[in-house]
Amino acid sequence: MTDIFKFWSMISKAETIHPLDRPVFARLNDSHGFDLRCLPCNFGGKLRTAPIVLLYLSPGFAETDVRLARSKEGQERYVKQRTGRLGFTDQHPEAARWRKERLAWLGEPSVINDKVAIANIGAYHSRTFTDHHVLAALPSSRAMLDWAQSVLFPQAERGERMVVCMRAANFWGLEAGQRYGRALFAPQTTRSGHMRRGKMRESIERMARRYV
Image (cartoon, rainbow, N blue to C red):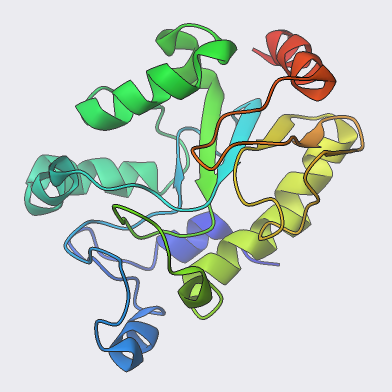
């Protein structure tokens, strides 16, 4: 069983490629769409303890990501983020705006910052994600999937916390439109990561109010 937090403790604060991913990228020889100037991590928020975890595919890209990677402040922030104990902050304005727009159904930003975490299969930033085939080759992606399947999903099925798949259910090993156990959901979603309207969305929104 993978410990996703131990996995990410293996990277130094200024590295832009996880050591175990480096051989894969060397073989690809730039034939991918990831911006490797940015600091990698495939989760954000207090993933160790957040009562609600949302699943996505891969982090987006903004020029702020490059600036953070080059700054001591940004590097120290990622060190803390990789422990799974750091809540969301407004240090990255584009990311804060993204959360405000897409996660409004969970409540005010102050609630989201402390009680919601995000997990991605991919750890590397890209403006438009098209490299699904690369994810299968990257140890960092496989580590996240293993941790989700062996730790996170059983917790949600028992109702210990709530997990909602907002993107690429099939890549997470889930089926869109299904609920598993007490609190693991894979609703129908749009490509941009919005839940489609319907009974499942209504159930998810009602349950989320209890978890936050």
